[in-house]
Length: 289
Image (tube, rainbow, N blue to C red; front, side, top):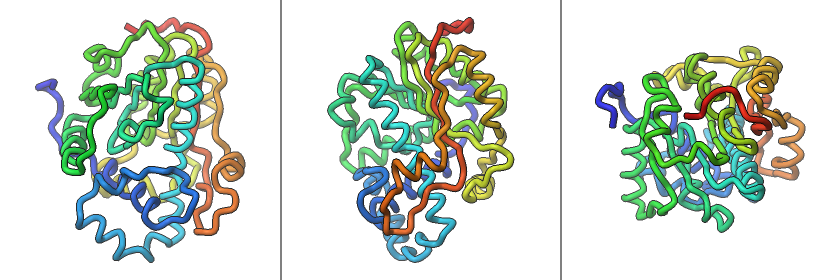
C-alpha cells in the first residue's frame, strides 16, 4: 500500500449501492433486472433488518428510480462483458469496484477471465472482511488493486498489478467518474484507449441537465460530492478522437424495451441517459505503459 495515500474510511456511497442491490433481490419482483444472490450476504444483520422494516419506503418513486439505475448499470455492464469475452477479451478491470459481486458469482463464461478489482484500500479491506464473514471465497482469478484515483495515476496503479497492457481488456467504471476531477476522468479514457483494439469501457456519467435520481444530493450528504459532469455529444467527440469506435449511449427507450418490459413491481427505467460503452477501434497515440 502506498504510505502517501490519503487515509479515509470505506466508501459510504459504495455501501449504499450494495444496499440497493440487496433491496432489489429481497423486495422486487421477478425476473430480477440484476440477479445477484450474494448482495444481501455482504450486509450485516442490522442492515438487513432495516431493509425489511422500511420496506414501504423502498417502494417510494424516488427509491425505485435510484434502485433501477443501480441494477441497470450493472446488468448492462455484465452483458457487454459477456460480449467482449465472446470476441476474445480475457482481462476485466473493475474501476471503483466497491462491493460489486460479479467476481464471486461469475458464470462459466467468465472462468478464463483475470478480474482486477480497483478501489481505495479502506473499501477493499471492508469488502474482504464482509466476504470472509459471509463465507464467500475469493476466486483465484481475482486480483485486488489498491489505489486512490486522485493521488495516483490509473496507469501507475495498474502497473503494480499483473494486468497485461499488451492484451485487450474490458473496463467497468460504474458510479465513479462523477467523483473524479475532469483531469482524472480524462486520464481514465486515455489509459483505456491505449489498450489494443477490441478493448472496451462501460461507464456511467451525469450531465448537468439530467435528473440524477437524488444520487448527487445523497452522495454529498455522505461526504463524497460529485465533481464532474459530462455531455453526451462532447463525450462522443472526445472518445472518437482518442481512437474509440462503436460508441453507444444506452437510451431510455432501449433500456425500457430490453430490461423493463412487462414488470409489475413498479420498477421503471431511470429517467435519464447515463450509461455508455466504447470499444477501442484503433491504436491510440497515448502510451499504455
